[in-house]
Length: 229
Length: 250
Image (cartoon, rainbow over all chains, first blue to last red; front, side, top):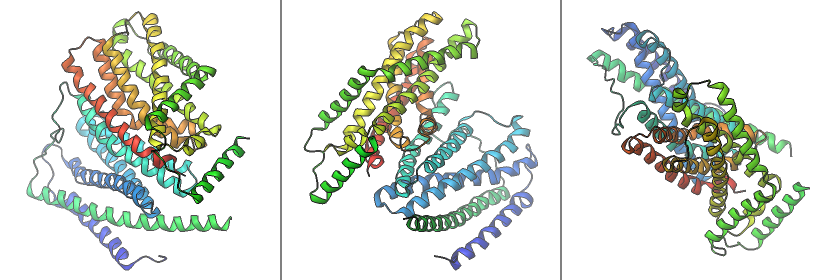
C-alpha cells in the first residue's frame, strides 16, 4: 500500500492527456456558437464538471449505505473522497456557470432551481465536513457521516423539485426541467461528449488517488492512536 | 459526578453483554416505551419549564427584530408574514432540539435510555414526538401574539395544518441530527448547520403553503405544497426511524 500501483500511474497520465485533448476540442475544434460567441465554449466543461459532481454525490450516498451494512472503514474513506471531489467539481461548475452567465444573462447569479440546488448542495457538503471534524472517534465519525449522507441523498432531489415548483406558477410534471437544448452541430457534439468522457476518467483517477490518500491518512491516524496508548 | 454515573452503566452493560444477550424489542412494548419517553420529557419540562420559556422568549425576540429589519407598509408585510413566522419557528426549533438532547446527554439519561431493553426506534419516536410537542406549544403561543401585534388573523385551520406538517418534518430530521450533534463540542452551532440545508424542502413548502392560506389562495394552488410537506414528512420520518439505531449505538 505504500507506493502507487502501476495502473494508477498510467491512469494519471491518461487523465491529463484526456484533459488536454478535451481542452483542444472545446477551445479550438468546436465551432464558435452563432448567438453566444466564444463564451459558449465554457458549456463543454460546465456540463462535464456538473456530471462529475453528480457522480460524486451518488457515490457518496452509495458508499454511506455500504458502510452502514459492512462497517468496513474503507467505505468511509470512499464516501469522504466522493464528497470532497463533488464539492470541488460543483464549485467549478458554479464558477464556470457564472462566467457564462455574466455576458449572456447580464448577471453573475440567479436563483433558478439548478443554481440554488447547487448552492445548497455545497452547504450540505461543508456541513458534512464540519460534522466529521467535530467527531474524534473514527468509527463514530464514519457512522455519523454515513447517516448524514443517507439524509442528504433524498433531500437534495426533493429540494430541486421544491424550488422548481417555487419558480413556476403551475406545478411542472417531473421531467428534465428547463429546456435549454442548444442545437449542437456535429463537431460540437463530439467536443461535448468527449468532455463528458474525459471528465469521467478524470473523476475515476482523482477518486482513486483520493481514496488511496485517505487510506494512508487512516493508517497514520491508527498508528498515532496506538502510539498514544 | 455525571461522568462517573455514566461509566458505571457502561461497565454494567458490557458485563451484561458478556454474560448473556439481553433481549431487545420484545420484552417491553414499543408503544409503551415511546409513550414513556414522551411522558418523561413532558413531566421534566413541566417541572422546570426552562426549554419552553427559552424558546418562547427567543421567538418573540426574533419577531421583534424582524419588525425593525423589515420596516414595511401593511401591503408588503402581508407578503412576508409566512417567511417571518417560519424563520422564527426554524430558529426556535433548533434551540429546543439542541437543549432537549443536550440535557439527556449531560445528565447521563441518554445512556440510561439506551440501556433499556426496548427498540431504539421507540426512543427516537418518543424524543421526536416530545420535540414536536414543544415546538407546537411555542408556535401556539407565538401565533396569537403575532396576530395581536400586527393586526392579522393567523388562527386559521389551513395555516394551523401547514404549521403542524412543517413542524413534524423539521422535528423528525432535527431529532436525529441532534443525537449526532450532541457529541460535538460545537453542538449548538453544529445542529443548525447540519439541519437547515436538509430542511430546505420543508421550509420552502411551508412558507409557500402558509402564504397561500394567508392570501386566501384557491386550494388547487396550495395542494402541491401540502403534498410535498406530507411526502417529506413520510420519507424523512421513515429514514430517521431506521437510522437512529446507527447513530446511538456504542
